[in-house]
Every structure is written in C-alpha cells, then in structure tokens.
Length: 381
Image (cartoon, rainbow, N blue to C red):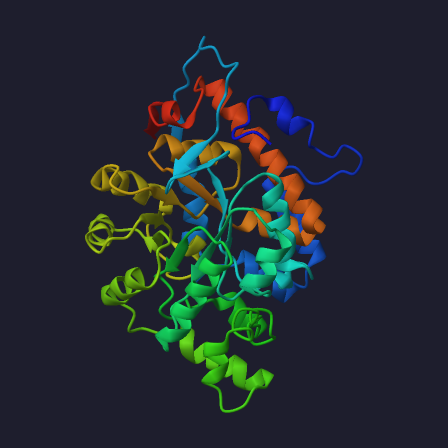
C-alpha cells in the first residue's frame, strides 16, 4: 500500500460487497447491541453520571460547519500525515480501549490485524485482554502505540513501557484522567465489571515485575493487585518527568482539556497532547473535546502535535477537528461496536467505510491534503 490514498477507488475496491455490514454509526451501534449482552454493551456505550458529557461530545460537532472551497483540482488527494519522524497514510488512530475481549474473543488481536490492513496505528490499552507481545506478534510490522495506566508501583509502569519499546511500539500514551474510576451509573445498575471478570489482565499476568509483587499467583490476587495499582490519585507532573527518563519513545498525555495544562505538559517535555474527556466516561459535566480543542491548538502553537479524542463517529467529524487544527484523530466506540458486530472483518469494513467518508469529505471541501485542510474555514454556529 502506498504512503497515502490517492483516490476513492483505493477504498471502494477494498469494500466487501458480498456480505452486508452496517454502514452508519447508528446501525453499527444497533448491531453491536444485538450481539452483546446487556451489561457488556452498556459498559461500552455508557458514560459517567447522567451521561451529559457523552451527549455533549456528539452534539457539539453539529455546531461546527465547514465552508468548502470549489474548483480546486482534487485528482491528487493525499491523506498522509507526519508525526514523530514517521509518515502515516491517514490521520487516524484507533483509540486505546480496554477489555476488548468483551466484544469479540480475538479482541485486541483482531483489531490490531484490521488496523494493520489500512496502516492505521492501534493504541493498545494497559488493561487489554492480550499482552503487548501477543499483539505485536499478531500484527507484526504494523504501527502500534501503547497506552499506559500508571501503577502505584511505578516499576510496573516502567517495565510495561520497556516491554512496549522492545516489541516495536512507536509511542507511549499516558492517560492522566483516570486517577480513579468515574462514577458510572450504568455499570453500578448492572453490577458489572469486565475487569473483575478477567477481561483486562493480559499485560499484568505476563509482566514479571507485577507478578513478583504478589504473595500468590491466582486470579483473585491478580485482580485485586491490578485494582490497587491503577487506582492511583497521587499521579502528578513529577511522574511524567520520571517516565521521560525511562524511555526514548515519544510520550503523549491523553486527557487534557485546559490550555494551561497543555502548556505545562510542554514544559515537562511531553512530545504530544491528546485533547480528550475519555469519551464522557470519567467526569460528567465537562466541556466537549471539540469545544476544548481550538484554544489548546492556539496556545500550543505547533510546538508539539495535538491529537483529538472523544465523539468521532464519521469521516466528516474527523475533517472538522483537523480543520480546527488537530494533527491526528482517535476513533473509539465505533471500532469497538464494529468488532462486536463483525469481529476482525467488521473492523476492516468500518475502517474502509470511514476512510472513504473522510476522502469524500476532503474532496468535496476542496482540500487536497491535511495541510490545506487546516486552512479550511470552519465556523461555530
């Protein structure tokens, strides 16, 4: 595959026309709901509190409108971007989502393989169902990043980062908005915790540093130790400084919404920022990610890449945040629903459709590449 998609034909030809797969986000979500148990689907779909932020993330996109340019030669469309010295054929990444085995038995392995087909980096979660090494082997040679939940015993964190680096992962994403689990009413209602059922232990049960801290190695002890480690309210900027000393990989902070935090991240040597409210799953009642994005882009002023997460559903959504200045876009729930509805092939089909949507939206907006896209007029109504 070339370093960029040059026409819609490249995507259209990859679409499976033999078996129908849901096209729209709403259809995929409905198919996932039918495929999953009620508690499992609710875990993925729901947010914190009264889910004000979940709704706000989606609704906020409707307030932004692009002003397309016309009569530009669009025969050489280029969706590629460059970050951290690497060129990626699209501006998309698959966001870190834990416990993917909840959606499909192959979980992270299936997603990594599907993402590799379209050269979309897959960000593997700390609480993934399969280990760093398993995922690396399943999609050998593909672009993968590792998302880190800080452990109370920081040597566990450092060792997981070391494992990711040795396995060929290209960046570390430290999630900073999960110092404690959000108040999720839906999970409490269902009395459901996928972590407690063993869906997110892949990296821990294969980590020698973590295992060395246990009095005995059994499922209950492993589970309790995971919970003890990742529930860590003491996380602060000094931990970021120490992490910088322990890896040569780029470090991105995921969960920034305030411009002052973005600037402070740069002061601490962070290589990238991910504007995110965790898809509305942590703190309810916060600003939507897209509303937080413009001011952060402004203050960062190109010093480090600014990535975007939370609320992406369609290609036009990705176009809007790129037009607002984001360097790359993370997709979350849509690929998880696609995994539940159709396994690995479902994720492949979703990516094919999403990329076609993005390409079409770029062409009809009159922009040939992401650089031009950042100059496209966009207004908030």
